[in-house]
Amino acid sequence: MGSWTARRRLSAVLAATLAFCLAGAAAAGGACRDTVADLRGDWGAARFAVEVADDAAERSQGLMNRAEMGQSHGMLFVYDRPQAVSFWMRNTLIPLDMIFMDGTGTVTRVHENAVPLDETPIAGGDNVQLVLEINGGLARGLGIVPGSQMRHPQVPQDSAVWPCTTP
Image 1 (cartoon, rainbow, N blue to C red):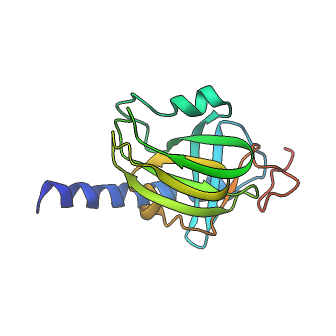
Image 2 (image 1 turned 60 degrees about the vertical axis):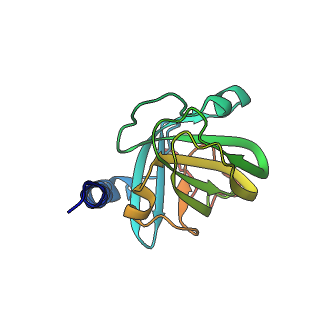
């Protein structure tokens, strides 16, 4: 078996393990923290420790120049209003999955395995307000697809499909 196939299988096993371990935690309780993004769908649920990029400087820097990122970590990009967004991988050293969402926290598009250092624009759509970047291959491994939902305090709570509740 080639090393690429072995890595893909290992990634799938790790993603499945992560989904299993985190599903109960993500579904439990409704309190939200700025450092945690919960996702759910027909596939189950997952929880990611996130850094929030909610201003132009933070969004511009993103995950550039990082040699690694924890398996259950990510970065959540937040925009003030729904808009057309496009990402690229300039100075980004690790493959990423980009999960584009509207203002309700509903996943509208998933771009898998963005290629490190590639400057080709990756369009997210016209109605994007949130983008979650996670390690490449996890979205497929977990089953995250359009229609999945995210819970996070940065999702406008008056329109959130999965709102936060007070503890």
